[in-house]
Every structure is written in structure tokens, then in C-alpha cells.
Image 1: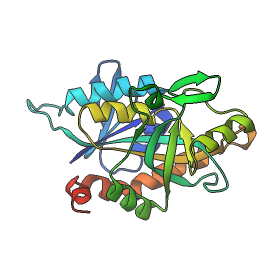
Image 2: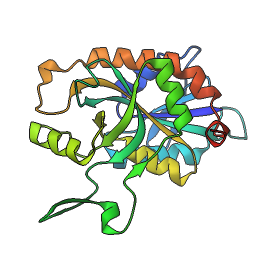
Image 3: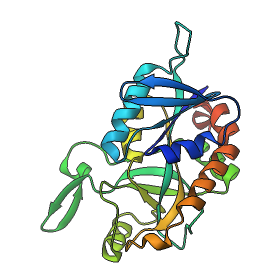
Length: 242
């Protein structure tokens, strides 16, 4: 099975590809480039849900083109991956999170009574649920915590905003900017989705000196090294069979 992994920026893409053995092949797509190693295609799709959705959609539409071959192999799984902020102390810096829910935390409307999610407005959706059996297996293989990961268009920069997010989404473990966009594109192509995040900073007041980006990228590489057999070998029947 072929797996598409979508990150925001090249440094995250390279952290993921380092986990896989074999030679690396580059495959050109409209506006982007796949970095292929074995069964894994890794794409730096850009920051934010819109860029992530567009890049994922282009890659899925391409059907994982194989160099020198007239046929293409479809993807069986899409993974949104990268570093992110976490609601500590549940998920400390350098730890891993696998999403059991991919949630659009700021998609909706502000009202006099507070924020209303897009679903309360009567249209759209604000959550995708990755395959539960796959979440359990990846969490077990990597030591990751499993829980909701919030997608935001604006990175949280205050304790007040962090508190509001947790109040609206109890149990949330982390926030990032791309997961929901990747999930939206994957759902429209009827391909299962997963989100994996390595924690680089705490959600709240921005303190760049306290961020541990290098540690998070190293954790991301380690996670995909451990999860690769699970991701490549997984099939959707596992969840249908319980």
C-alpha cells in the first residue's frame, strides 16, 4: 500500500523521509514535489489548512505516479505530520501525539454569546475521525499519546486563548495548522487519514526561547521509523472487523 505524508514545510518533510530506508526519488507535481522512499511519498504542502488541502488534493489526484510507468498506484492512506504545540503537561515537549480526532477549532462564527462551530451554523463539518484501530497501533508502536488535535488558522499566543480552546475542546492534546485541511482533501477522495505530531512548544504565550524544534523533529523521525511497518501494512478492514 502506498502512503502519502503531508507536512507544512521542507524541514518537517525531511525529518519524515529520514525515517525510511532506500534511495529517494523526487516526483514533480503542480506547484510541489513529492519525495519518495519506498511506499512513502512525502510532500511539503505549505502552512495552514488551505495550502495543506490544496497540496493533498493535487497529490491524491495524481494517483501516486510511478516514474517510467504508464499506470499509477492509488494511495491507501494519507498522514498529516509535523511539529505542533501541546496542551502540557499531558503532552510534554519532545513527546508524540496521534490524533483520534482532527478538529477545526476556529471554523465557524463569533456571536454575542461566543463562538459557534460551523456545524452549529447548519453546514459543513468540524471533525474527522481517523481509523481507531490504526490510531491504537501507531500509538502503541511509537509511545504517542492519543487524543484530539486541533487545527487552527492562527497559532495560539496567549493563556486566555489556550484556556478557551481547552474549554471548547476538553481533552485536546495539541494544536497545529494543517490537519483538518489534509483530512478534508482525503475525505473527498475517500482515503483514510491520520495525524501525527511531535511537540515542539506549549500552547499559550509565545516564548520562542523555550521551543524545542530540533528535539521535535528528531522525535518525528523516530516516530515514522517505528510506525512505518504499521502504516504500510494497515488496511481499512481492521476497523470494520473491530
